[in-house]
Image (cartoon, rainbow, N blue to C red; front, side):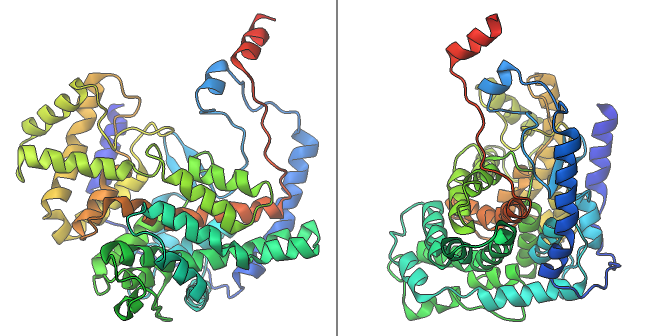
Length: 470
């Protein structure tokens, strides 16, 4: 454990990795690249089914059944695997790997959606040309039609932002290419092509939907007014997140733009077992289109136990700041941590359902802060770092936390607050823009691999007891 903690400390001391020139010079389109890979993946699946279909991957215990199926190896998810000790890997690439090899936006250094999406869908590192082509496509398809704009503008701005988000996304189902093709009759081997088109269209439009909701929340009574046009404008020269920041009305802030690029790329995929990813997969397994599948995922993401964690951390940090001030001593922070634990509460932002070591996403965001003097000087961000250095020791001493290290939520919401996004409920919408790239990538592969409808066996408590006593 000491060596693990030392590695964590060294990680925080390392500056943000500089973008390294990537090797790939491919000019093949995303669609061409996926089409090349599909036969290989189909053959791999066929081989697993025929040669190893009866192989045992693990036991199912009663605690798994009544404990949220936690830890069960019962789901196929291609893009990422979460190791309890190493953290997330995207097709085998760690976060530092991705920071070194994935092309950033012109003039930027951080991972962008387009690069991460290409990797998640294909398992390959994209070339700059491939990434720029995706940015161009997203800009061309990101504009909302009049019907969608009127729908969003007609919603009560006091309605929870995630409710508005889910409604708007589901409404795009009327334009689903997959739904239309399925209705007229297509081969199963063609399902993935229409699912890919729907998925790319939805990813392109998510920032525009999210920005429109943000405008209406901040400007009640002005929905549809002439000065709301900026929340719909798209610059064809910008990447997806670059446009999103402009649509939010926060353009010109290079630091915020780079942060959201990194935040959205890192939150894009985290295996398939989390609520939002699993929901998209489950609903999609019934051959619901990408819009319906992802709207369902958004409503799962809205739950307090999934997508609201960084808001809870921020409230806790602000309450601590009010108590200890802007220049807290280690003893004051320890005292506040113990008062939280002794009151029967958990320290928000620490521990993880799978991870048993520092979250590489937290490390990446902390490195982002360390590389920017204005962030290092922020009282809130400075307090977050102090807590991250002190809390693990307190939690170890407390003895009730399996993983005493910070997860990504320990800092992500506090950074949004620093940049002036003070509408806490909106934070989950940003998460929702991000999680689409992982959930929809898998939906494409669900169709390409011909995965069946999900239908696990359920048991009553009486049935469990009967099985136990046999």
